[in-house]
Length: 285
Image 1 (cartoon, one colour):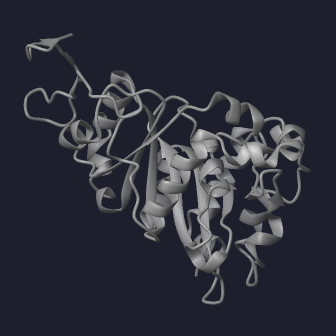
Image 2: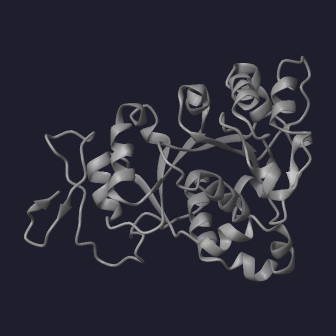
């Protein structure tokens, strides 16, 4: 059976889809016996890969969800498209209504069967669920690993702290992926949020723009593969698959420079505000 890895965010738009695509693109060859993963766009709010890459509207997530109720639903890979950066993906149509219903079907045990396959299937399914809502909770419960994507500022991490009650359910199989600059170290984040696995990924605007322009990817595959995001994404993939030593949670989003700020717990609770701390140790709002 396939491994199920869920990518999602608590709030905002921190780049969940871009992170999932980067991890799939940088998937280490030693993982899953060399079988490439498949990205499934399962955001109840609707997808954007169809528009971004000019893909046909069928097959899509809707076809996969509809087939899940059949006695023989067929292979998930039958609905996958090959994206220009060498990633296999099942795209979702735009629009909240149909996608929310499709995700609801996939969240049932019959849907899990399609996502995971049977004992003959190998590889990993990278499930991009967008915002972590009640619609996707059964998928989180079924996941082998959850990658929670957030930006590195105080406000986004405060939202993560507010989600702590739900995080506790998955903390042993959860990685917090912080995208872009972050003034805090991994140790700061772990101490305040109780999440041991913290990964820092650079915000790579050029790579994000490139995955929205498929022709550019096709022309410059070597340059594309050297993008800074992909090195961190490969380390993250190794973390969630357990294939090799990794080092994505030891620095911060500022290239490992010493942080002059730390996360502060107020009133002994992880679900607290984040404050900036001066050199003298006095918290400033």
